[in-house]
Image (cartoon, rainbow, N blue to C red; front, side, top):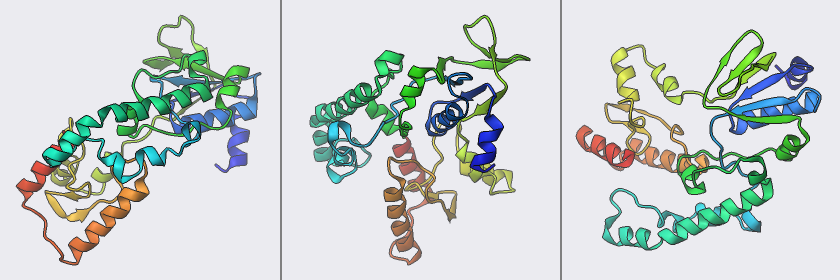
Length: 271
């Protein structure tokens, strides 16, 4: 649907949006714009997230904290050696301090405590798991005026009247449910192959990340390179580096290690 058709489609409907990341927040804003306080949009979520209002905590660029060479020294990583390991340990208070600095800005600007939306995990954990997104401008103003209603629930179900929320005796009347719950990226990789053997190879074990050496070469399928699958805070930077690395590999500047060595490296990084 184009914007006009979508706005018309949700007009006058009681909408429940499931999820609390970028798409869910954007859709909820569109619904609240279309229907206002009279027909509020319900946002059903499982976990509070550190969604950021901007990338300038207390006026300081977030990139200066996390997107530079120095920030790499704060994190333990495989093959770092004794000196870098000691340095990462010594700098751990700074890592904690950066996280609290950003958290204080988000809590203050979005008034999270007022709405019971302060996450239980740290900003650093959210950053490491690539679970950051931006909050639409004036999102919590809409919550305050009542055109967006936040509902926390570990699970939900459907019924004739609408949505059954865990812990509530009566159903929440709903005409339309929009599931903004993400997608399974590994299924896209799996669907490239007709062979069930290669489908199993590409996905790897269920309790681990997709096994890609240097986040782009599969040890069991070395003729295939995958760019941009793994997440980071800024995918442009990491994808560019992988493209350059891949170009050197194709040019014959270096050769891949053995399958066993690649699998060992993948396991280290996964851990």
